Image (cartoon, rainbow, N blue to C red; front, side, top):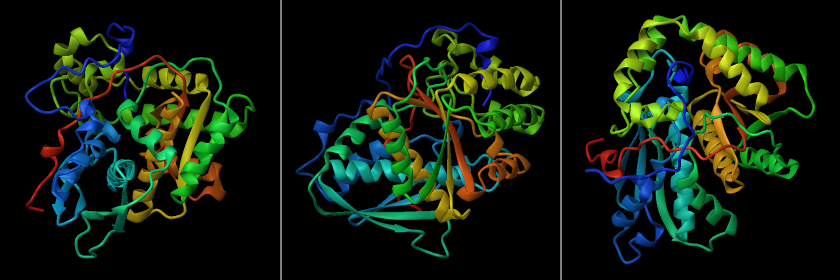
Length: 366
């Protein structure tokens, strides 16, 4: 993803202001408002406020939900696909898997078991999962910590501090991924390896190839939105002064019109080199169910990281270009199929990107 802070003024990030608008803001959801005495439908609608806070490519939020009896059906919203960056809908499905994990953690926090069916209808490929609100259960402390991290998690594209992640935390993040059936390859600064340098080179090559493609730039530009929008990439997400929000159309025009791949490659290389840790999430298979599981592993890792005040951002460029993804896979042949590449570290607080309200993603017509 291009970062235009090299062109427009950059300011220090501030904590979210969460100003109210015409539509409810899921980032403002308060757990004490959970409808304990409400119907199952009331509870599920409330819980979906946490599902929609999951990460997604370009902040497309490519999910829809349908409440049926005592459960929720999760659908892929193909109208929000990225046909250039994600032609196979792989990252779309991963994003939906992250929303699924958020929903499950929210259910657990409020004392309910989750009963999950993955791909429950063979003839309905957009129906990714069915999640029912199960019987009461004892809440684990770790689940409470991760639940409260949901509203504190967002992608942080700022430079990370020169501070290493504890080895114990790295082990816990690896366990988080493994618990969802995925692999986690950890690449630190402490023990420089040729593979880490090769990964950074692939990130830079991905930037150059993508930004040289007018269709990719056009697709990206379509998702540059003002902060008043409920989706897309606002200017503040790139470290640009929020007062310049009105320049979103100009920024979109610049992305569409100019190949800034070399500049972006240099910027991302520096961010990757400075990152205390690069992490690659991989899976055994490369089918829809594997992508969903990757999304759950990703959400589990991100929430566990935020419990310890660790931020993350993504370097998925080499995963969005088939020939680069093959080269990335060849670097770690024992880990299966590479799915998500990210950096983790400590950083200044950053502002969350907007979200559609839960009632905007609940449909009765699916």
